[in-house]
Length: 233
Image 1 (cartoon, helix red, strand yellow):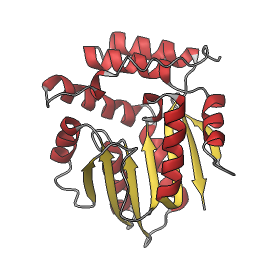
Image 2 (image 1 turned 90 degrees about the horizontal axis):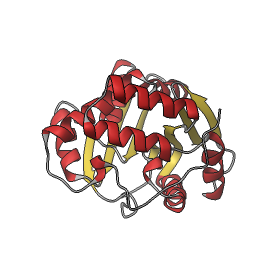
Image 3 (image 1 turned 180 degrees about the vertical axis):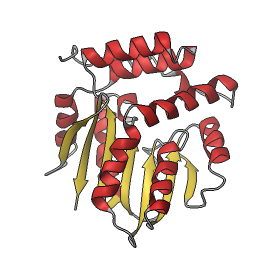
């Protein structure tokens, strides 16, 4: 069942995106997001493409845009270590407090370099083999999301993977129930409910990629209320 058309109010910002210092509230919220990624499909989605694209003995460079707590890069590194793949990742985010927490959790991950930057101003020294962007597109208005997809394509030599929520009535109801019963912290509750309402429908996601000039891209649904678009050279 499809949800009503997406409405984005730029005057309302997710609490995790607001200027702030490191706090217990922010740390708990980011840890909750990490748990949601682990148990509700984000890691499985990324693993699907790692298995599809990589074999033992391969090596690659990657950029992770809007990295947040850095759990997706750490998941990628863990998978690569287990599968004898060499990787170097540049993880980019504009939120200094979030990056401080990410770097603290990534001390044993020399494969990851964190960089504080607005993704629309970030210019890599050279393109990376892969560009990842997970659960970030819904933070932006349509025009900005299209711009981000264009930038991701330019930054990648070989492949791009952009994963996000899919906005449906079922997904909205599920997030409201989950944040009423399990993840009840105020920041998580506010941001999660705003995120699912701002997420793109399956059709809207496809339209974004087309508007960004992506050609012959892949697009499919994943559990739970996840979708991904990707490019393969």
